[in-house]
Image (cartoon, rainbow, N blue to C red; front, side):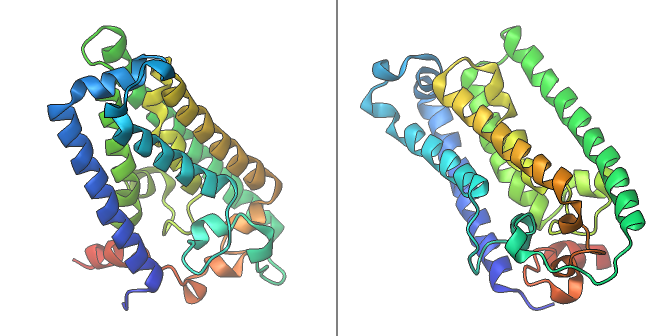
Amino acid sequence: MKASKKFIYYMVKFIFRVAIVCGSIYMYLFHKQWMTDFLTKPIEVIGFGVAPLHMLWALFMGIMMMHIFPVKTALRTMAILKAKEDTYQPVEGYSEYELLKFVQKQNRAAWTVMLVWLCFNAFWAFLYLFGVIAEAELLMLTVFFFLCDYICILFFCPFQTFIMKNKCCVNCRIYDWGHFMMFTPMLFIKNFFSWSLFFTSLVVLIKWEIIYAMHPERFWEGSNKILQCANCKDRTCRIKKLRSRD
């Protein structure tokens, strides 16, 4: 399978995220107090020394703004753009009954994912509330989830494999839940930077769910031609398909 431009673009972004994680690990090992101050002190108290964390916050917010206000470009994945009206290509005479069955099945799987994710993060909340881990560790957890988002897209997604059972990320019912999942640990820290990330991610999720509820036909390959393999230009499943052949 030939690599598409979007696949190459995703690999470049994956490498960039690896670099962000490596930089965060460096800060955690050698400037952990910066992380703690960034997440616990008022804005006016924070000094110049934590500027890299401000840039990290701005990066996270900028990415979410692009999901709240998606712009159709040559490199935007159809996993996101399928929610937009101007990219929807209806399948003639599709079965509304089959669409309803698809929606019901996917909804059950999606809320199972939500339950699993909340239980998983309840464990980290427990550790934080009882002082086993602190703010810096929660930020590192968020940065790790930031990388895992692309690991799920490009290499292996446990939610796709074990719960959702969808064939690829372009067809994924919960594709835009990523930011909510990424910033869930930030909910536990009472600070502008942490809460602004979490609640903005909640806006991304709510917007996605509203569009899905109002226009489910855009999210099923049986009613939207752009989600069919023959019309896919993303090819972000390349490595997953190679793994499945082994």
